[in-house]
Length: 396
Image (spheres, rainbow, N blue to C red):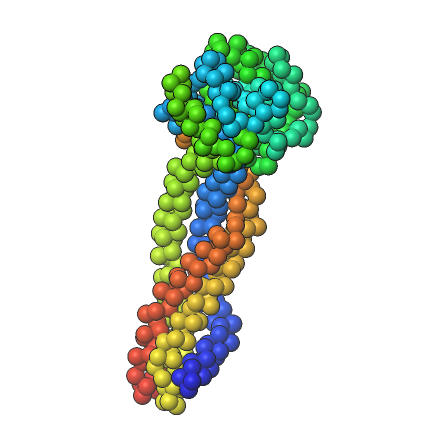
């Protein structure tokens, strides 16, 4: 208890005198804050992309694709196969009608609003009339639903925000095909909001696909019906398909890019952190040098050397906490909700998403700031504890 009281007294004294060394303390605070801003903002890209992808699917829906396909772009289903899939048990039905949408997935080029001279791959999805009923989260927010059998399309809100010619009333030109935008839709922030939707049959004719599709999205009787549905399809000799829950499919789609961004984020933070640690070391060495007589006096009065070490480390970590808090607040204010788009490496198409500075990222950023403060204060703390008392007392 005596040692603890000693330590708390010195820590309190060190923290109260920080304003007297504000100019040198600011070096460490600004350096650590800068690292946290970059660290949290880069990871918020991965967080936003992952949330957009993983929030897109439902456990109560199943995605049927050709066996071996890792995405809709590389899949293919014939009209005959689609008809067989609709007969599977476990499917939700309204009367005799299976709640399943056979869909076509193609890529078109559109210019970005942020860079009109460059084009980006934007997914266009052909759906059947049941395509809207199997996705109850989708709603039209402007204009109207397209009419099946026509060259009308509706665009997701994310695509509308990122690419040109997607206002209601605009016309999209893709090769020899022209599509009229008649509505905008939302899908609870999911990846579907980056897509353009139209009639599957019309899209088949425009791209000469015959009676073929790339996937089938099925609404299940219940999430527990998935095994029944999958087992019936995989044991049917007429079919060569793979079946995944929709949420698992989109979660898998996000893994490659998420890992890449996280790796880059940690690498950048590590490199910048080295600089911030040196700033903290210089700051704390300056603090120790300017207070050498004060430290020696405390030692002469009987204060333990370990109390001095802990007090210097505590001061360094307080500076880290201040820098981490400032950096986290700046990252949240500057990046949370920022709309952007990036390529999905599985389909080579754009995905619109919003940066997400989550509480977990803020805690991670603050923790990293505390670690930088701790490492930065370690050598100065040992230096303070090893100061010779007689010579330190004689310093002017």
